[in-house]
View 1: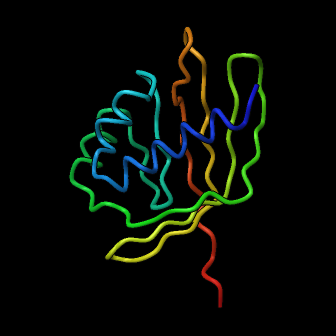
View 2: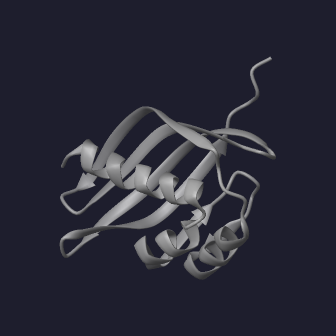
View 3: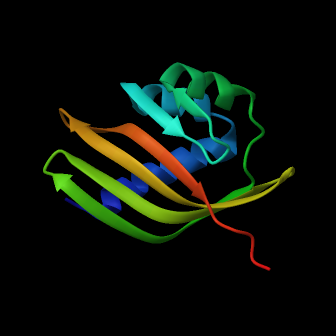
Amino acid sequence: MDIDELLQLERRGWDSLCSGTGGEFYGRIMTPTAVMVLANGMVLDREAVAASLDKAPPWREYSIEEPRLVELDERSAILVYTGAASREDGEFRALMSSVYTRTGDQWRLALYQQTPLPEAG
């Protein structure tokens, strides 16, 4: 299993959030039963994610720092990293985990989870 392949997919997701196409991207890549557990305490299914991202302001920039791959088996893995992003309404920094599962020849997102980091003081 190659971390670069999943990092590329994760970056495509962030790129979609920057271009305003996140709803379409995540609506397509998430498994039918996937959820996102967000830093604000919300848990959203695929349809709710797509709908909320269609209305969200785009991110200006993002970074993926210290990525690690946790292999579960040959068809599933967790990409763990520190993510940071900024847009007009502020900045966001969190520990992020994306659980991917392989269906056929495509990786699909089964779970995404954010843990906010305390602001540097």
